[in-house]
Length: 47
Image (tube, rainbow, N blue to C red):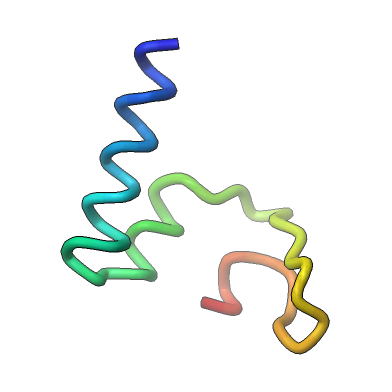
């Protein structure tokens, strides 16, 4: 559980604080990520 929290906190730091979206998604988002917004393609490459 602590590993999951640390990974999430790192993602938040990169994504929200540093605003480095691509790096955050490369760090934590799986390649088969399913986007629930119909106007954005699936997968991390959409970001």
